[in-house]
Length: 232
Image (cartoon, rainbow, N blue to C red; front, side, top):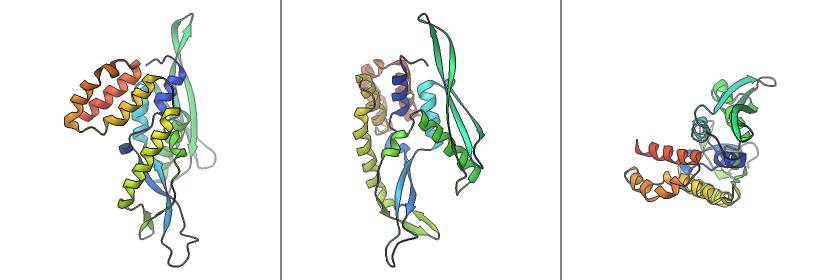
């Protein structure tokens, strides 16, 4: 897939994910310094999994428009490198393509150390391309945690509040990620498709047919592929 300019590509990669595609885990806690009788509290951290990143790359640049590899990092860390294919233009004509690489690394995690390091390095490399970068700007205060044995969890009853905070954050940042009308339309479509019941998705697609048809090719393909996933 070719893009008219690099800003359009970055905006499509950096588009926020639907709330259903993000998860929360426990970050820093007060376990070491809490006073007697004080409940265990921790900072919820919002994240996406590696499959969501792969889907975003596939839908925006095409399954053959990106690649990745891993190289040794410092000490026991590992570096993931993600490359995206760009057209080479000469005298207004495409004469080939080139691969642009960006990478980042991660160390072993507490659970499934090797697998966790590979996944974390992949997601961090994707952030270099803008994917999920906005999640680092999402500020959430500490919440009371549940504890089972030595493991702390975010209580189920806290999840709706976190989802609301996420959606408010997305609404706040969307106006600054791109300025063209079609970018806003693209984000609105992607953000609402996953809220439509599967039985109503065909009617939703029909009602937005003209808007979808007016999007740039890669954005249009992403919207249509997202609609298709909701119908199967």
